[in-house]
Image (cartoon, rainbow, N blue to C red; front, side, top):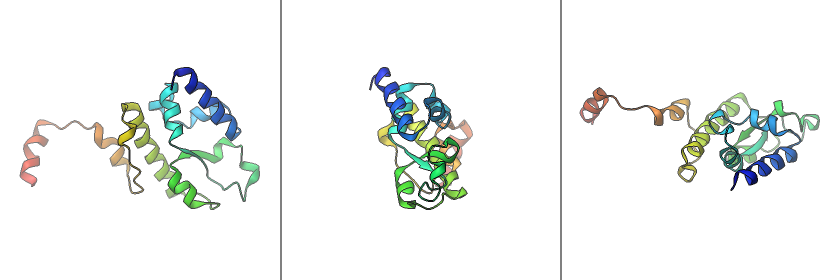
Length: 140
């Protein structure tokens, strides 16, 4: 997708949700929000998930403070139920993992993991030290 196509995708995606592109980008992880192509790839892999279900809170349908990006599996599985704080935290973690894959140019290696933690977000970026390399074989 070209930069222009990416920008058009983001404009259409925001318009479909009743928000501005700026509001869409505010909820996009910073690791990909500065590049339209990466931001578009990020949003192609996410649902626009409402925290308070629109079925029971139609007045919040276009409120960006009532929404966040989320993998489709938990979002669509929840249906018209309210998103819990645990589900919001899980979505934040998963969004950062997905964004890291997009930013690294490896979106094809991403796998949704409902049990991911913040440890999983930062672990790939921790370089082993010489002591880690020495101790790791001893732990086996």
